[in-house]
Image (tube, rainbow, N blue to C red; front, side):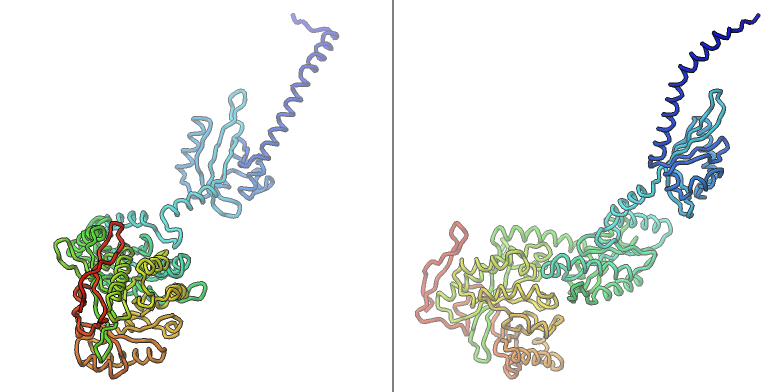
Length: 610
């Protein structure tokens, strides 16, 4: 028997059910609206499909990321987004995961409506009814394009030089490791070429680091143009570059090195219109002949590079086992140089500057010598290049300048009839911060008339470096110091630039003087330099004079000052009192000098020279 509720009970029941379900339905409506709002605002693409993968709807982010509007994508299968990058096995594994776990997450390459491929992080979840039947899939995805681009940028910057865009040292090591592994496997050969710009520091010091950066970018572009597609060029640091050549032998390495040196020696035109003339040197190591590990090959190429620079720059050299010993010797000399500076082992010898033809000594050139603890004299040719390489040339040059000024004051105070003390100044010293201030302090400390001091600066230091050297030289001239261009005629002389420099004297290089007796070009060049100096109202002096023929030639063509072994070798100051051609005032007294505890020089009266 069945019991049927009365009409009254039925009415009450209906009323009761209606009052209970209204709030629930209203809550559902609010939740659905909130969900739709959230889906429309989220930046991740959301798509809903039926159990077969046919798209039912998607949010605005889906349209923005894929390029498909909701109307375009509805009723299409999700396969429309497949990029073709992934294999069937990839998708099979993905669906196996969804069936086993109810969801799948991972990175997928998808395709936009435009055909562009893009990376996405995708989550796909299955939706089931209360009875457990699969009804829908919900997919969400984030566009990883910007993230991947940022990762690529970081990866690139981690392995490339920011300024030139070339691979950096880390990338170089990895590439060379790979090349060596391939060489061992294939029994092939290759080369490592270490390239360094000549005189680059002068650009930074005189024109500024901005100009130096421009030169480095130009140099990198030129290096790229020299190599094959299979080669690699990396910036090693500073103005150093390394080229890795696989499947290369000695002959092909020579061809490439010559091509590189030729390109890097071409003038650089900066953005402000200034022209900079540099050059380059290169060192070459071969693999597996010279070594089979990255560190050694780069080290050997660097040693060969140093040898190339020592040979006069602008050339290349191959590594040899002897260079390793030379490198060790350089390290030893560097260490001993630092100790020698601390122990006051350096001395100055003075070569007379002579008026010709009368033979009267008018001054001296100060030449540095290294007298070791065991009284051996080390040639400047052995330690000056290392001092320049290590930066010790700056304190060493300051010591030489102070000592020469002190000795000049001593000579004058004791009646020496001379007017000039010539001191060589290196490019590093000249462009060192505060050099002019140091010079002024030394002149004041030694109480020396600045007109007695003459700086000899090489032609290469002065020429082709824009306005900066002119400004610096004018500051030096402002103190009253005289300026001479050393080794004139051996560099890339620019007569238009020369007349802008506030110089007083040209010095004919010894290489021309040595060849005067053979006639030909050297005679013409020497005569031309003398004529040029006369036309520009400059003094001229010839160095390296060793014969009467040379002196007669110079006098005949108007040169009135010379120096060299013909007049006497450089000697310590104590030996100058008996130097022929050097005159002394009759009332002159000889003073010897010593150093007080503060390190400054003070005169002590001694015997008379007369």
